[in-house]
Length: 231
Image: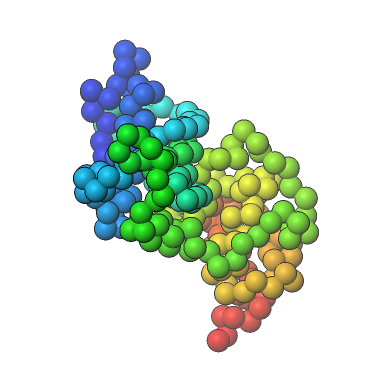
């Protein structure tokens, strides 16, 4: 979802007021569901409401008047009565992540009593959570990586385009990147995973900094090494 920053969004300092981002996130969530065939209004009319019960937000850089912004939304976790979304506000001009958050929503019915997520919503959320066929854990990796706990819950690589900077030393960045590359290659072979780690840690130039550049570099180099370009 893209939109412009207007005067009404800014504060006395000339930057977007911090609370406005919460509204941006809400619009992004509504459009995220709409794109999957769901209407928040229709769900509410049928007795399903989804209040926010927890929100973790990191403000990284300010947005200013007339900036073109984009809200990106991804599914992080889905439970029986709740789900967690990762959201971020990105500046369209340079792809810089300005704000990112982790939002927990629960499903309630009449009297604000918790109830199970409706099947229609589960169906809409499932493709996003099942998009990757390869699921990796830290013990699958050959190299050891530090854990950036502060940014653990911020949005990670979920596919191109993604011009955000990639931290090749952070476990929480490396895991989703390797999953994406392995899925692109169509393999869950541990030897391929170790090869990808070697490429990233010993061969990939440091000027390759963005997530999409890292993804392309790993995929193309691996295809060449595995002889997939000849198929």
